[in-house]
Amino acid sequence: MANPGTRPVVLVTNKEAPPKGINKLKMKCDVIFPRNHPASREEILELAGQVDGIMWVGHMPLNGEVLDRGGSRLKAISTMSAGMDYVDTEEFKRRKFPLGYTPIVLNDAVADSAIGLMIAAGRRFHEGRLAIDQSQWNGGPQWMLGQDIKGSTVGIIGMGGIGQTIARRLKGFEIGQLLYSGRRPKPEAEALGAKMVPQDELLQESDYIFIAVPLTNETFHMINASALGKMKRTAVLVNVARGDIVDQKALVAALKNGTIFAAGLDVMTPEPLPADDELLTLPNAVVIPHLGSATVQTRNNMAEIAALNVLAGIAGSPMFSPYPY
Figure 1 (cartoon, rainbow, N blue to C red):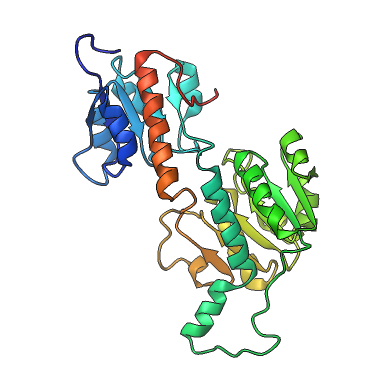
Figure 2 (figure 1 turned 90 degrees about the horizontal axis):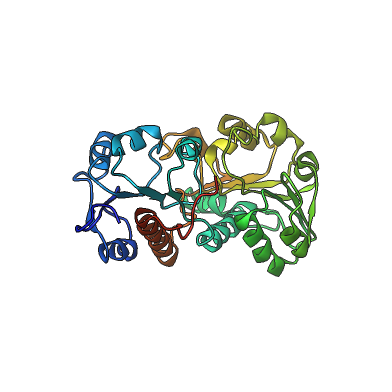
């Protein structure tokens, strides 16, 4: 390990990181935290030059500036996330710097949130609660009717680990057809009964659409006014990936004018979303504050894997979960 004869030092960038990961680090390292919470970027950059490894908790940009400030002493960094849109992975690749992340362990929790949003948006839970709050509980056989799931066509944009987990969850709902789109066919998807189709066909045919792709230059505003216009007026859009995959202004317009039926969103732009944002005024938008992986066990597992990554990187060993350059 670094600094022969002494214990390595690891910076954990957020004091609220789960103890399971912190305790794993403390077995072999001295752990330090920023003094402030939330920490400023300058404070983190200053501390980066005093440590052998960093457990990066949060979505503050992680780039060459951090590596420069870390200098020759800094040996490894692991995020506590699966999404890496805030990381300059090309810079890490160029420098051949050990970088870890924590995919897979959050698939179940995120998929559960996605299914919850599908039901809540399709069955108008938020709108129904608003009716109660406003003393407009009218009842009647045609009041507050939602969309059926049984027999429906469901489309998943991005059939990676989270998309596949959503597909497994859907089996119990007796849906009619499962479609997916992506760069290439996935044997795992075919085994789940999913059919790969062009994205336009998925948009046009699906009653429920899940977004489960990473945010990249190619997926930025993938769901724009044109894409929304191809969807059914009865369609429900669910986004558990990243907010900027959807053109939010176009989505607000589509929800207001009935281009689509409803949306369930765990992610949005910006985050945190201002309390006066127009999105929050829409009765057919179910919005939750990026809670996809927010379960006790999932966050514990993420912290433990991030810690194992950092320890391995400092030791010069292969990381438990290295980011694939």
